[in-house]
Length: 493
Image (cartoon, rainbow, N blue to C red; front, side, top):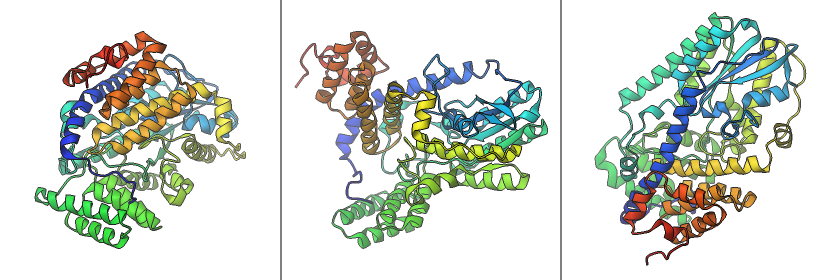
């Protein structure tokens, strides 16, 4: 817990701001889910292109396994970077005397049911399963299908104390379905003679925030708010012991309140108590009332299941903890809640290469890799990396719709969008995204600066982005004309 940590916004201002933010959030959420639907329903039915002379490595899972944000631009097959690509580079492009072909069937937003369905296609199309293996990296999207469809309602009702997305019984059903899907997927692949590598899932523990903090007893709402406020005041005054006491009192009465665990983790970390911080961060995500990260129980089950069935385990969570500062994976390894930077891709990809060598008894030394080698050999040039930063900036703004206090996600979004603009300062799409972020914050004058710059570069793109979703409703609510934002008319006072 640090003095610069987010504070509770003033409720009336926050309500007005989030009402407008709901309109804007609808734009990006609708775009995201349309993209997920199109990609998952068009790509999966396409014929899988196999090289029968190669060792074929299939990747199954969601966006992290797909390689996001290093997946190819629309309509292209490269450049890309994912765990399989890194493993192939480390293995010198060959495995067990054959070329190593990476077939990435992972898709954004997909869960364990999708993994099961795609595995059946792999089985039916494999002519010689001896020369194939499947990496399953899955777990972050199990609750996605349960997220509310009404974006405006979702945003407007976000508060410090929130209702859960699912009941405890429904939550358990999701976890049991996940286990059943991975169990039957692994069994069917192995019965068909195809090797399986099952991975734990690593997430950003140090930098992620829970979305919904749920009270066990609603009558404790005022007590919880007071304890958090007092703890924040104590930290700002340097009274760390008092802050710890406030947090202990809160969690003794509400032991599953996610935001308190997140803040307690910050406090432990500030004091150098890293084991305590790691445990608190995990609890904060596990108790999230709208989880978008893997639960610790899922990784625990994967370790147990692989040991019982003698299935190779890629312990991505453990490897990322070893690579992380203080043993707590954070923003140095991840772009956001779960998508690794190139540094994280290296960690997991190299472990996958090691696992593949053991699986095939290929004992050759692995190639030494670096970020520079990945960028040069995969063609991750300046333009591509600028687009990556822009994509993550938009994604973080989208994630802000899920939380009661979006400030920290807005700040991270801005840092990514500003970095993209440093590389491509005249890109009209980048400028529009930066303008929309300022609308999210309710700063029309700052937004106008970016809209006007975008309009100067490409009037058509600026008009198109201003016409997205319900931006028009939002602007009408505040009496702002589109042409005013484009610099063609004055803003109202």
